[in-house]
Length: 120
Figure 1 (cartoon, rainbow, N blue to C red):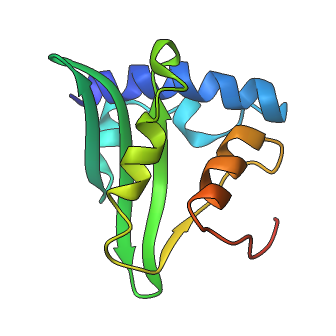
Figure 2 (figure 1 turned 90 degrees about the vertical axis):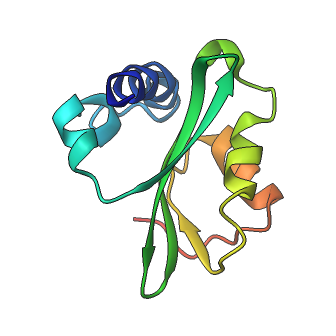
């Protein structure tokens, strides 16, 4: 499963790299060992037996922190990201970060009621 997460992350985040013009985002460079070492709770989206998306989060003192959200490019724009994020909202507050130029991700999060707290 970690191998599939690495492959899906790279395919999905390649789109964000193109949108924001920066290829230094961690999911583009992580290994299977890195993914296995994360202290995340993982949610997966599947079409039949094929993993087509995922989300990784940690519960922290200040709230739930969504660290990863990715969907196979062939399955984009089908509501998978929204359903994965919605599945984490039962334990507020929930935090997430994305590139400011990643307008599809910003629109998704704002559409789900997230509020921008700052840029860095």
